[in-house]
Image 1 (spheres, rainbow, N blue to C red):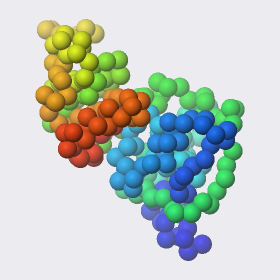
Image 2: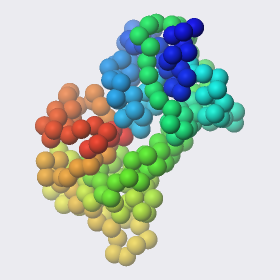
Image 3: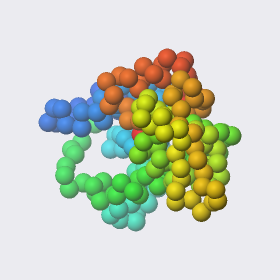
Amino acid sequence: IFLWFACSTMHLSSTKTPVRRLPEGSTERYTRWINTLTQEQLITQVFTSHGPTVIMPTWFCSRKWFQEVGSFDEGGKGVPEDLLFFYQSLRRGGGLTRVDECLLVYRYHDNAATHSVTEETIWRLRVDFLQERVLSRWENVTVWNAGKQGRKLYRSLSATNQRKVKAFCDVDENKIHKGFYTYEESKERPKPKIPILHYTAAAAPFIVCVKLDMTGGVLEANLNSLQLKEGIDYYHFN
């Protein structure tokens, strides 16, 4: 009881990693991600497609904090109530922490309600939260990825935040050789043209739209080579 009280008063707390998936090897990337997050990354990586940085079935917090945040959205199938609560807890100033003990075993199954939530619903919530928490504080930004995901993020931003995007950056010489991305769907005239640069020629801060753990360590090495600080110079949105 003391452990629960000490860790959960104004926090969403979670049981400690390592998380184990059965059968072994299922959701391998996700499991590796959730098992290797640092305490700082519990906050800085809340925008990724993986979702909450503490796994929802293992959450615990005080009843007072639960009521202050506002409980879960009971809209039914298709509503990502865990992600909505997670974001709202952070908005209200709640923290995130992990407890260094295994306190819970839970079963994951194919009929879970989470499968009724569309990818586009999650995308829209993530974009809105990124704009609210990060882009609202920045005067300009470089989108790291001139490919499909980077362009989709740009198109999903508000007009105000689109104007903050000063460049895309990439490692693909073919994309860089094109020189710029034209926002063809724009109603502006002339249509916005965003430069495409090699990542070494681009300026921070960055929103990184390349998936972690998918490039054989190349992305991570490139970020490290620039001596950037996660949560200050860049955030992952992948």
